[in-house]
Amino acid sequence: MSVRNIVKIDEEKCNGCGDCVIACAEGAIEIIDGKAKLVSEIYCDGLGACLGTCPMDAITIEQREVDEFDEKATEEHLANQKPQKPDGFVCPGSMVRQMNKPKTGSSDGVAIPSQLAQWPVLMGLVSPQAPYFKNADLLLVADCVPFAMGDFHNKILKGRAIAVGCPKFDDSGAYIDKLAAIIQQNDLNSLSVIHMEVPCCFGLTHIAKEAIAKSGSDLSFDDVTIGLDGEIQKTEKI
Image 1 (cartoon, rainbow, N blue to C red):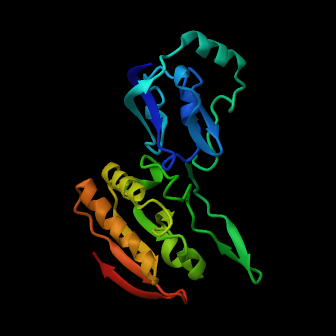
Image 2: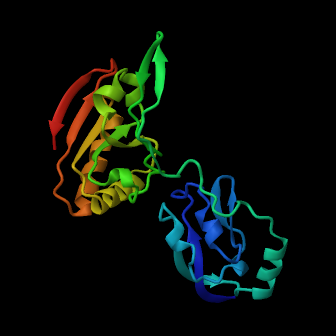
Image 3: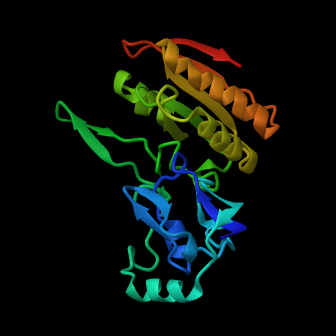
């Protein structure tokens, strides 16, 4: 064993998209139980070709004592390996899509157009480089809001980009990093934080403040509180 460069995968950040699997020419990474894992240190040469492909910044290179890279064992591993994904595979959950024509649903026989113009919507899946964030009016929305607010699409979502998450159960640090990157890489027209009236939901406001500070921007945002009855309780400029 010797001290050398080796891939390190943060499973908390990993969304299982598999881009790193395709990028690793040695077959050292596989998706196991929905997460990218280093299957063996002897297959990893430590060069880090997978780093730039991870949309979640979940992969880093560290130096630690590990077994030497074994080129012969790697060749045998590749010869016996069954491909996990077809060439060019993109995880359906993270593939960027921009919809120009809203779809329709129905309520009591009356068609109600959806105002969603992008995919994905979850904070953990959206990419800061997505085209729908450029010059956007961005909504940072608590995931309970659309369920409580019956007219969310027409009253809030229409004409805006969106990132959805839960400040109580998800990683707030990852949210801060992702939102800071979105702010830094896109000239946002505006930012609105939409959350429920319950105390834990106000964590989304804190996340927005921290992300703006981290980005170095002087962006202000509208902080909108939604009551359990689905009505807007308060809107505050921060």
